[in-house]
Image 1: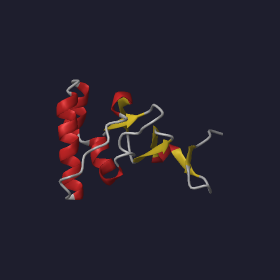
Image 2: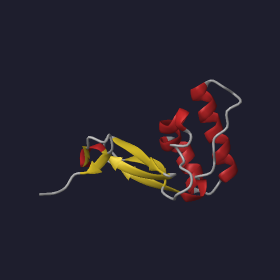
Image 3: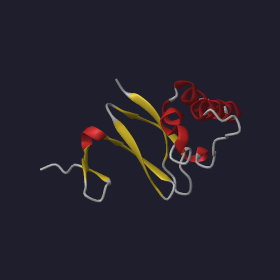
Length: 111
């Protein structure tokens, strides 16, 4: 079964990685994805703030919306992670990644 995931691929600001307290929830919430796909930015931000506050328990928290304009919905078949560099998020599936000594993942090379 595929998991639908919000990923912000542009440089400058990530989506889930720059809201790290609730990054998994903000990347995968089905209602949040539906609101994004239907272009309901205000409702999206309200839902995202609700998620963040539920996870942190702090009702003064607000999400950082800097990566919103560059979000796209991607899919993964199995376990996955999001790597961020300079605000640009990349989705990687664990089944197609190999661990390097630097602590970063890289795609496996076919032989």
